[in-house]
Image (tube, rainbow, N blue to C red; front, side, top):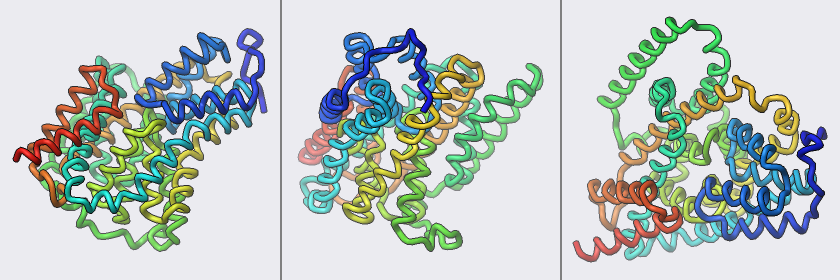
Length: 415
């Protein structure tokens, strides 16, 4: 495999045990989301231990953000590979993921018992609502670097409209927008871009207005399963592998990008989980350490037990390991700093933002579970409070979501 380091980037090689110890510790203690992990890697592995140079670290971050998959996990694989070769990359990724994997197995195994207890229903209700607020905060953080760029919001609006029309094409929307961002600005003149932007706004507004008028929140649970394609008749392990490989290969920008794809397949298409069970899975994925897409483990366990959990987890992380350990070192050397790379990232993240907004709206409008507090106003109020706590305070995500559950339980006792 080609080495992407220049002589100036070179650092002494480390050992597998060193890589294992560091990333296993972060696998147990890596709360706070991908941004917190990235900052920790920079401080401890770049500035203090000097595994790689800061210039190489910054270059890698810029390119990894253009890849599908969870940024923090891919960065861990990258740093492990830089320190101890390909095997070091594998060890780093597995060490970061494994603790959260077993935590999700435990939560999934006892979920039915927990869900059946009447006193837990308000807690799960509040955690679902708080998770919704945390997801909204994640969308805002994803879009914030582009908040002053009008084109970004036009693209997000258009992506949201496309996803409204046909949720199953969401991966194609993300990839298509990214590719279009590389080539379209070179084709259209400044004047024609203005006309094209106005046309995109008109189309998106018309589509969204139509969807709003005819939107049925109960369609999430009442939709008929798909029976006309090969996937519907495939064995369930094949369905799991396909769905989670697809999800892992198109989570551009953030692990939260997995939400619309999984909601479309797991909830609406195959009815493996109800909307509120899916929201519980997302809440569990947020409060455990490591990447948010570890939610896949919960879904896999609920569908096919322990074997399903392994299948779903391996499938969803397959693209991340493959990309970083095979062709990424070549791309790192050849693509860093190119204008087309930056445009691909912006257009793809705009599409991710639009699809996430659509998924957030569907989750917010989903029928509430029976039992416990069932007021839509209360649900949205807790979500808003969680959003405020995540954006305006230093409260960590793993504390915000359980706090939402405790708040709902307290209100249930008072009502």
